[in-house]
Length: 243
Ligand code: GLP
Image (cartoon, rainbow, N blue to C red; front, side):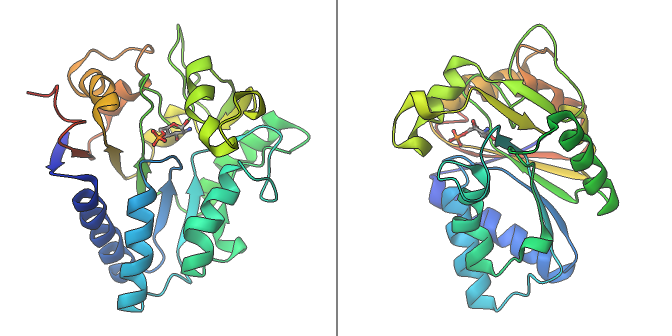
């Protein structure tokens, strides 16, 4: 794993925005895998600003997001689809036809997961997958436990993950759905390149376990050690336990 440590999250966001903008400029039909959460917000802001400054063309880019809450769709505040529309897709002019998303309102959730994997394959696979990490070591919504489901699947969320997402629901835990759809670790590991972002001291333990710990379903992010092209973009606090 290649580890880059930045003094603060603004510097991390700027470096990553430059990296992604350069990729899109060099390869306009890039397929990006994208995360939601607080961590990527400064990056998305900087990417929008940099893209506007450079006049970058996003019309051939394809995107696939990691996860979505069951029962929620683009029209719902709190949905990851809405998050992405507001922060990235609308500001960059990325049209719905370019966007891949798990549909949390699909009637048949298992079929929706299979459809999503097929859509990623039909797009040629993901060139660059960006990831956040949960404080409990989750990736997307691959939760720690006795086992991991490798394919894209339906997840029952752990209490800690629901609590971490309450901020997208006006701080009301009761409004956070109990289930989600998530790309599985197999789909994530098929990406040609992966960059994991982590900021803040509350991520330091998960980062340490992911990078230095054994492969274990108790830390889904530890499976990133199996991938040949993984970079970590960390701020100093998230890196503090790496020594
Ligand atoms: C959320 C998302 C993940 C995200 C993680 C960290 O629950 N499902 O995709 O990476 O938890 O979120 P944050 O960046 O807000 O800490």
